View 1 (tube, helix red, strand yellow):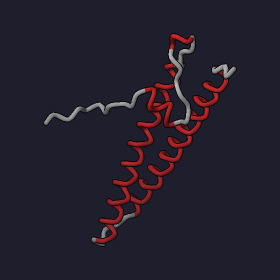
View 2 (view 1 turned 90 degrees about the horizontal axis):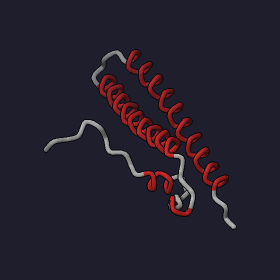
View 3 (view 1 turned 90 degrees about the vertical axis):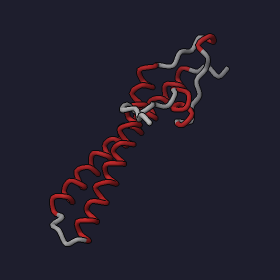
View 4 (view 1 turned 120 degrees about the horizontal axis):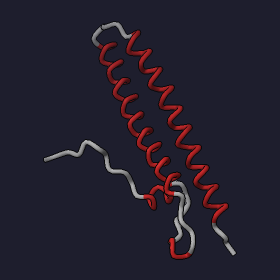
Length: 110
């Protein structure tokens, strides 16, 4: 079985749906800002990757502790990875708010 090196990204529609917004058809005169959706898609991938890195580092710290090895460096890396993940989550959340605001401004509900 061949595993792709580049992960598949979710569709723009599923991302917008996850943000609590929906996309209107281009035929009705509304085109979603594709760059904004691409940035959100990348931010989601960064969060997913960051969560995996933090979890892997937590397991490593636990293994080192269980076997009586020094953990100072592993714990410092875990703290750095956690700070990076927090920043990635904040960025993702900001992009979700921007996308929701964009849709709210763009859609004429009347």
